[in-house]
Image 1: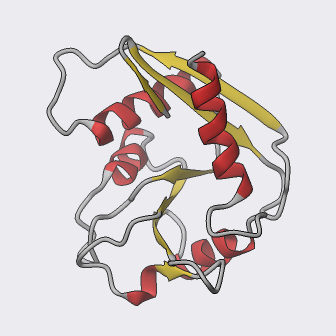
Image 2: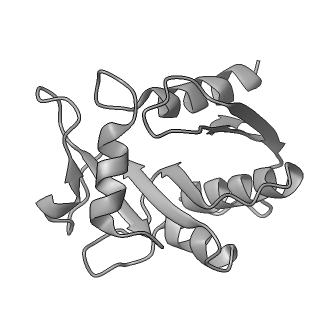
Length: 161
């Protein structure tokens, strides 16, 4: 997702295998700003953006990987990924990948993809945490952040220009 003065650009990629180096499909959507604006509304903006993209593209994925938290702590305080799961009626599992450590989440939520970098934080709903971590660990990319997550971010920035 890329913020603009007049809203945001949301980009998503589909892939056939967890270790895929390239997307099988690309989706981009321009989302109008939330009115009225909500202070600290990053999660609300992301949720609205993803829901609009899914609606516009008539997508009903079995599983969605997001750049952000599903849960904010080990007690499963809802993040925007949980709100997405609920908004979709639980029809799509959600894996949240965060690059920043979150207080309240123990080491069991960490995934090490590059021995010299900090771990990614993985939270999920609708899928077992162990299975989610294995999938994130096997995603393509030699560095910490998977290749296809970087691609979605680049597409969102590129869609703004």
